[in-house]
Length: 193
Image 1 (cartoon, rainbow, N blue to C red):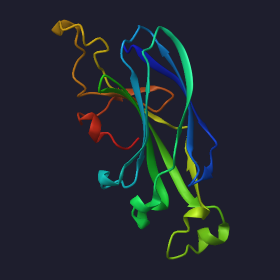
Image 2: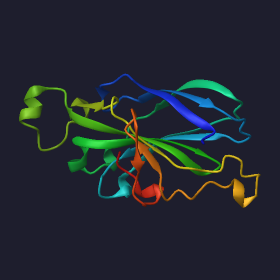
Image 3: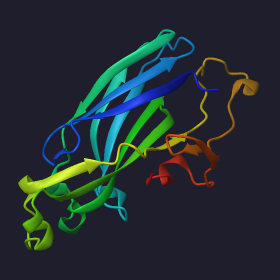
Image 4: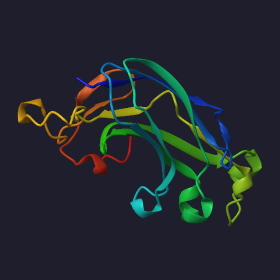
């Protein structure tokens, strides 16, 4: 059982211009006191084929945390379009919201993001070079892909019996219901929602 459960993530200001900051209102509950900080990250996947194009948009530390319910707004700058290949700016990509405790990722929420022009004429006859100030992003917030990884929330307990199983079989959900365990890929391989 996890010591922290995300109870809701609301995507604010969506759809929006590609160049506007991202805003997520995150609500979570803590079931046991945690002495260290939770690290929340927002990652923009710049290319499905090459993770070197991924951009860490924000990383914030929250904690220490007592038992209770919490809510905050995570705001992050948009990705730097100069660090994305021109052919990967338009169309569908992925945005990852992750949370870790003492360096152990325990949850990942993936969203598909559709980037398209805000004008029908530009959609029908796209220019050779992307007009980034005319690109609108739409985060498909109603269908997040949630992956949970078992971790040890109390690493001070060195007894091997207190350790969770290795994260070889993360549990995935579509945000609405539980699904069978995912494949045996390492958590860093689970890039797409």
